[in-house]
Amino acid sequence: MTDTPPPFLPFARPDIGDAEIAAVTETLRSGWVTTGPKARTFEQAFTDYLGGNGLQSIAVNSATAGLHLALEALGIGPGDEVIAPTLTFTATVEVVRYLGADPVLVDVDPVTLNIDPEAIRAAITPATRAIMPVHYGGLACDMDAILAIAREHGLKVVEDAAHALPTTWQGRLVGQLDSDVTVFSFYANKTITTGEGGMAVTRDPKLAERMRVMRLHGMSRDAFDRFTSKTPAWYYEVVAPGFKYNLTDTAAALGLVQLQRLPQFLQRREHLAARYHAQLAGLPLVLPACAPTGDVHAWHLYVIRLAPDACMGRDALIQALSDRGIGTSVHYVPLHRHPYWRDRYGLAPEQFPQADAAYQAMLSLPLFTAMQDSDQDRVIAALREVLG
Ligand SMILES: *Cc1c(COP(=O)(O)O)cnc(C)c1O
Image (cartoon, rainbow, N blue to C red; front, side, top):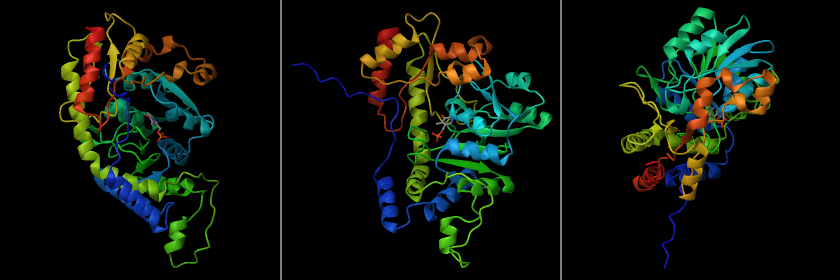
């Protein structure tokens, strides 16, 4: 008799329970499945979660949509430049191209892997309009430095907070900082999920209004408003050529339950990250930076880097883990290495020494709330076996 091999451990998996299934079922039975009461309740709950304080939350069908709406509302257009890190997902900057503007990619800090404020400074030109920090893996960027640069040069700041729920910077939740718009993602592998979805958050009522109108075809009233209000239901006005970026009520129902579970989700992620930190300490690895004392790291990702003296390369390590039934990923192939960005802007790895070196040594270990300590023990044992 041979032992059956343990099941494949994925790198991430959504944590959807009976409460989510009940909430979605109730919405499906309610007769209202597109944007309506659940989406509104989700927006309010999200604002409340972040602590209110004049914030408005605009639910959208992806973070990509939210980032696009944010830049559109800020008036970004042809001839404008937007500074962003090269070590991010392409969504961060593809939206800059949607508007005919140009992203200017910069290097990251070698310790945090977040955008390097000095690199931002060096990239500013008369055409620069905005900065898009990405809170990589769930660790806050140096927002004091970034907001100071923005103020000094009259630039807008749109935070890509796809990894950053709930992340804090100097005790304040990301979403409550002094940027123009912050955008969260509820994609399947993020810290809470609606399947697909996102939330744009702002304290500026004009930006909020523009994003709401552009979220749904540039219409002055959405379907739910027309359904419930006393003025004639059939009447609306189109004020701009908008987009179709609204979040459905079925997705919002899922999100409402996930948001309630966020504190427990965070606890679980913190527990798993602490165990990785303790158990991987002696290996030839660079472990991910922790948040400064008193601040929260959302631990969306646990990104390790092979030390230069490790006995194998990154690709071989990914293969060795895969052979042992363990899934991993790489976050990210930096944008300067993708053909579109590389060729359009003539980018070379030498321009981004920190991000490029990190990329060649990095992999993301399994980290998700439904993962058991025993699952994690397998990952740790495999790393010890092949690297020890
Ligand atoms: C996931 C992600 C996005 C896009 O989120 P969607 O909700 O899938 O559109 C944007 N930026 C970063 C850094 C991401 O990880």
